[in-house]
Amino acid sequence: MTPFPYSVDISAPIQEAQEFMRVHKIRHLPVTQEQKLVGVLTDRDIKLFLGPDFDYPDKKDVTVKDVYMDHPYIVDLNERLDKVLRTMAEKHFGSVLVTRNGKLAGVFTSTDACESFAEFLRETFNPPGGDEAA
Image 1 (cartoon, rainbow, N blue to C red):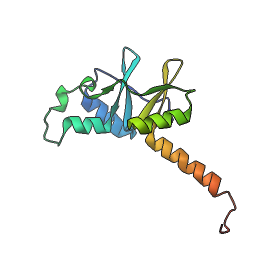
Image 2: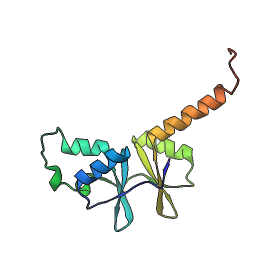
Image 3: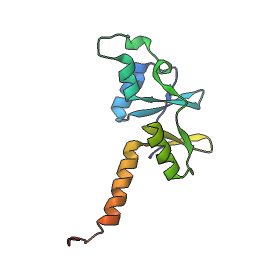
């Protein structure tokens, strides 16, 4: 999980949000309205909305509100990981917004899940000093 993630206001220009995501190398950006979590903006959603780079629609006329996904998958920090992973798989969600006491605490992505599982497998099946063949 990425703790203390960045977020963007729903009224921000899409060009600004896209550049912010590029600079910070992130693909999922929580969206807020009046400091309340209302959705998520992904690099994929931006690309699908804007289409090929023919300046149509003009990025200057598009805001986050035009592109973001409302009703994102939001869980409390104490939610069981197996339940989160099952829901992500069933619903084909690439990210989960994680809250603590109703406030944004992090973003958990499918990449985070893969990295954690890889580490688990490495620790479980390749213990330190285990150079001998099985």
